Length: 157
Image (cartoon, rainbow, N blue to C red; front, side):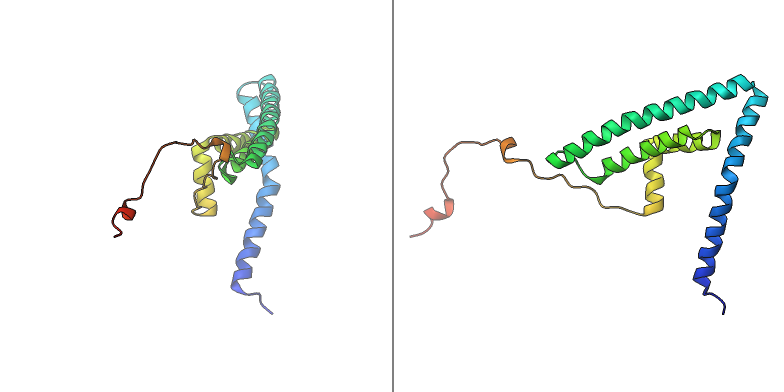
């Protein structure tokens, strides 16, 4: 029995994704070898060490920032899931920088640049609703004192 056309499309996409994932480490290795050929082996090794260090630094910084944002979300002082998505995308950028190779580093730069990241996210997910601010807590409201009278009470005979 032949599978439905929809499933054939999914099978083809899955096969292409598997092939790309198998090909990626070899392409990353090729880019590092080419960097070593055009500059020097020491430069290529220094490039890998620096990008790993930057990736670890970004992961550490974003980990702390994400916990701070989660705490603020519990207090009701934060907008919503957009900030969490930004934190997670910076974490992904840090992981991509740790992975040695220039292709993953370019992908990390795309993820790190906010407008490109948001445009890519909109293209993948489609339009999203805007986050709404929660109401302020009662202690933050300002009370204005004064006198008033209803105008419609004066009209009653």
